[in-house]
Length: 243
Image (cartoon, rainbow, N blue to C red):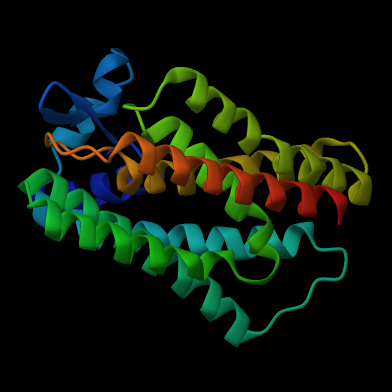
């Protein structure tokens, strides 16, 4: 029963996104440690490293099914195909599995080369859930995960990223209300939407969090990358807003 209990707890954590990390000195620590009373640090410490990947994979399966049901719920012309549903659910499983491997690497203290490789692979595997209509949420997930996860960046930069991440959801919420009217059922659609993407962002934060070593990118190179990234995100946001 102990093993099954840990497995269930791990699935809850993977869906809730509580295993996020940040730098504190030279160590990676649980991000929720700075928020006493949440109970998240205690939950995270009780999950064996060997269970992280299967727990996140199962969490991705559960969230993928929920997300597929939500997509049908907000559609004004609902359609269902097994191929489309399997693709969506598989995308969620792959997404969470990729980020869980990064989490394992952080906990086991992988070298920068191996951890960077895992982060790149996780980022590539993440693209599966942003196909078709999901593409509009890619800028939101990117900006929110960076704003929340890059604890080594200046706070003003992180705040700007978080503000940018709210623009597209605002218009999506507006469209849901416009399509179905403002009522309790619409509120349910919106709340589920917020919960789904909050969990996705929580998982992505694991991968974008800074690494626990002394290496830092050259300031000029970092500034150039940030400018290019910010321009691309701003263009994507504008294009979604105007569409």
